Structures are given as structure tokens and as C-alpha cells.
Length: 271
Image 1 (tube, one colour):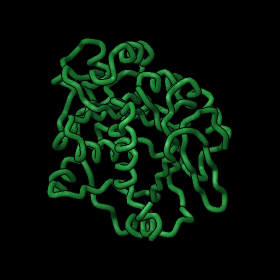
Image 2: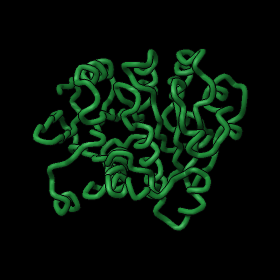
Image 3: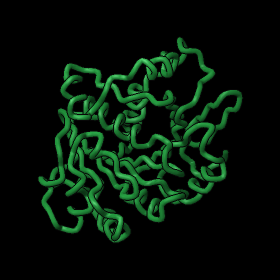
């Protein structure tokens, strides 16, 4: 698989190692199939009751046995983007070539760990009007959301929901009919003030770029982009097309989702 970006990521899948060469430190995240987001602190019970997180089932625990912890891998990614010494970013969007590649889960997990680690507030934003899911996950009303706020139909307080300490969520709302117009308005706003009157670190769940007509435009609203690829499922020509469409954007890395790593578990823990 070949991309045209100069950012870097190392993708490992069975016997085939696929590397995107570049200047960034390689980013590798391994996500076990059907792994649930785990609430791993004293607020686990209340978070699960609100839909913020849930402990993995036994089936998921078996599936994830021997896999790196997705939360710690997401933490590594968030630190490399938001807390690096040289030019840390203020916003990052998670996208993919097609739907069903796990980008929403990774965006949610990264936002959760970033909120734990950051002294600045974190905002999880949903800009995917084709298949919005955050309202279901957090038990929030589907509207008003980002779409209604961008139209000026409601206030920031109406759409911004605090779901955990230091973490707020803005759901997509109903924006399918005028998505392009809404995204143009969003792109005009600075990274730190996308949907808030005070600065916040922003993580955005974006639509796929190949199967959604406004996917590339949505990605352009973010300061940096991470592309998620589902190992062994997403056709390589779709991945190549997605990379081509994102060529002019600052792609920070590629995450290979639902893969089996050849790196021994003891070595993964010290990498």
C-alpha cells in the first residue's frame, strides 16, 4: 500500500510489513476485534450507566488477549500530537476510506485519555452527518448539535455536554441537507475555538473520504488528520484513493485497526 504523504506510520499485518516512510516517529496502534471501550477509573460505574464506557465482555477479553492496550496506544498517539515539543497541534480528526473501520471508537478513546492527561479542556466533536453515533453512545439527544450551532439556531451551552471530568462532547445534529455549507463555516473558525468561546483541544470524528461526498472537505477543517484502516478488510485501492484525496492535508499517521501483530507481547510492552 502506497501513500503520497511525508508523514509516517508503520503498518504491520501478518507476514506483510507495509511502511509509509516520512519524517514523523512511526505510529502503530493495534486494536483487537470488537474491543469495547473500558472505563478504567473510579468513575467506571457511573460512566457506563451514562454510556461513556463499558467493561469488555468475556468474548472481547478473549479477543483482545495478547493485544496491546488500545487506551495506551491511543495515549501514545495523543501525546505525540498534542504534547510534542515542536509545533503541537490543537485539533486532530479521525477519518477513513469507508465506513465501519473503527475510527469513531478510536476518536472516542483518544479523547478520553487526552482528557485524563491534559490540563486543558478536551472537546470531542462529531462532524459525520451520514452516520452519527456519539449521541447513542453517551445517551444524549441527537439534536441540537454541531449543525444547529453552525446555523445559529442554538447556543454553545445547548450543544456542549460534559460527559466526564475535562471532557465535553458535541454531537453531529442534523446536517445532511446542508453539510457542505456547514463545513465551510466550520473551516473558517480557528482550531482552538471551533465550537467553544474558550480554547480547547479538539478531537473530531470525521466522515469517510471515499464513500462520503464531503469527507475530504470535513478533513480539511482540522489542523491534522489520522486515517484509520481496517486490516484485511478495506480494499487497497480504496485506501490508495483515500490517501490521494487527502494528499494536500497534514496526515499525521495511519492506524491499522483489527490486526494481529507479530511483535511478541513482552516486546510490545516496552516499545
